[in-house]
Amino acid sequence: MIGRKRTLLKSTLDIINPYAWVTGLRNMAFDAGVLASYRPEIPAVCIGNLSVGGTGKTPHTEYLVRLLKDRFRVAVLSRGYGRCSKGYIKADAQTPMAQIGDEPFQIKHKFPEIEVAVCEKRAEGVRMLLEEVPGLQAILLDDAYQHRYVKAGLNILLIDSNRPVWLDCILPFGRLRESLAGIGRADVVIMTKCSGTDRRTMEWCRRYIKERCDAPVFFSTMKYGNIYPLFDREREIPEIEDGCEVLLVTGIAKPAPLKKEIESRGARTVLLKFADHHNFTNGDIEKIAERYESMNGSNRMILTTEKDATRLLQRDDLPQSLKENIYAMPIEVEFLDNEEEKFNQIIENHVTENSRNR
Image (cartoon, rainbow, N blue to C red; front, side):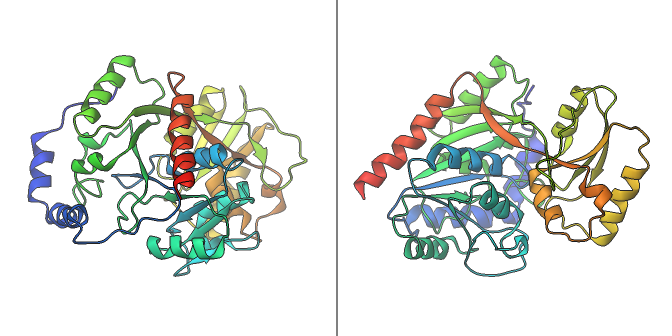
């Protein structure tokens, strides 16, 4: 059940918070045209949120890629969080993860036919993509809701149903990047991770959001796919079932739902949790090996997310005993209430109409 009551303390903290004033004035400057926004000549769809942490941006970005890639020439532009490089980089099949960040690396390797680029200055990144990719028809701006120097034609706002923004407050007292007024910029709102959300709560969320913007509200959940061997795709895939022992290795913001999913299948799960976007060290690999060797069952495995898998693939020091037993769990988005077609139509219409207008 999504909580609904915002405390007086949190509201007061937002009022007196200097960061709230700075971000508020910045947004006012963009709204008034004092700070200029660049609008690309092709459809640009922004996927973002008001808060830091995991709301499911990468799975939703991948959903949009799957939706559009067979009909349009699509590019994904990201900041490239955690990369060791600066400036604009367009990825190819040989670009190392360290140069572009784990999430862009994951997207490029899952969808090699699309263009993936990183640039901390989004306007520059968009211009470079348009210059380098003839016939580009749409750009997906990953995690760009606050990057207003680019004016997207369609803003998709993600809100984590387990930590809704109206129960939070602005940094550093909470996890919000800006005030709740930012909801008003959304063209589409998706409440994410909604497994178990009841209809009464869904309607309350719709009414709350409708008071702040005239945007359709959707509800999505994470669907876990079939695991696959990370290093040997021909290897037989074991079942996650009763009696199975799983060492779950994660470097994501919120691993609890994944752990719950694995345990629901009957497995005994040991969570080895690292920070979000964590780069595994030699000591981490030794720790993983020690934990795995301490598991005594014959039916055991190491399981990780696809995002973490990209970082493990970059290491050349993994013992063979680990490589043979590491599996990745894919995560995809699923819309509730059979509203997938309605959402798809909004996206496809926007890209089609604006491509035609070009």
